Image (cartoon, rainbow, N blue to C red):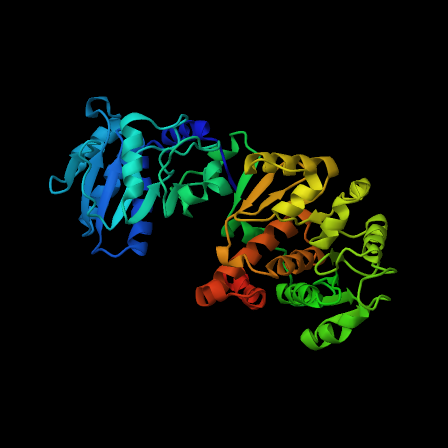
Length: 496
């Protein structure tokens, strides 16, 4: 996994790698510019007019190198700079000298700002180094840029946005942010969504070992590493090897939730899947997922004990189960008796939040709350930074895996590490997709994955399936579309 480091550590890594690779800082800057350029060319047509706004530091140097590459490729490019050229960084000056004379190079004048003509503007004013609110001519510049009606792209960081803290004041509002090597922490915060836009992370070739030398318990989950986490099976593997899992949930009017979890577990590759549901859901599950076995509970419309889970390798509990007293009794019995790992989701979490004395039974299990469910479990938070810190503490204290769902879902491990997911789409924000995730993670648990790897791989596959389904369905995507896309995720990861 790619370690996420602080803005202050970036310069150290750059310097260490430059020394090790025996290259210049300008050559490393050229790598970053080429990575941005390749993404840009695959996203925007060459007929577009591009305005690149730069400061006079190294981020501005990135912008000048990008301007040169885009100009050479046929884009109509001009550069608007802000700052004292006599105090420019060395790498900025080198790239300024390399800029063709045919590329317009103009100072920004707040009293007479340029008339916007560009169809795309590129923000390369500030990078990770900024640690104070914008003011003066730079504030005027960013306010002007935010008023331009064009596609807006930031290089590495939206100017004005701090790398590791919440924003104070103004920042550039990007449609896309192309971050180099790893996403800076503040790009993962929901409070910064309107500044970050769509996050793109491009590798510029710095070896992972240079990151491992830096202190950080945050990691970015990408496809190559997810593929390596998967278990290997062989030609003589049979359905028992792929795990026996049980999904527990459903209540009158909410049988669909546990049906989705059941089907997702099967699509993820479980060998044998059973569902425990109220008697009112037996025919629905049997007809909707004929591959699953159904264990009817004693309750007609709600879940009720007893339930023996000793024959299963993993159990997922909560989708559609409701919060009736009988469901609470069942959950307590499962927590007290479970000798296999469980995934707790939805109403299982809501019931748990009202019985905090049960938290002592959470060791080794996976909890998958969305933001509101998490706050019921752990307490109300003012912002995502506070919420992430509380989630980390919760996982450590109770020695469980806590999956804080949302954009860039964060998996909190018992050792304090936090893994931020890179796959997914806003179109996953529709009813039932959380139930699908429960089935996916439970499936991996049943296949013999550790709770940590089951959560990390399950979340990535779930997000990737959402990406695949959204290509055709867009806002019309349903949770069942995500399930049908799960097999393709294995092919995309080279695991077919």
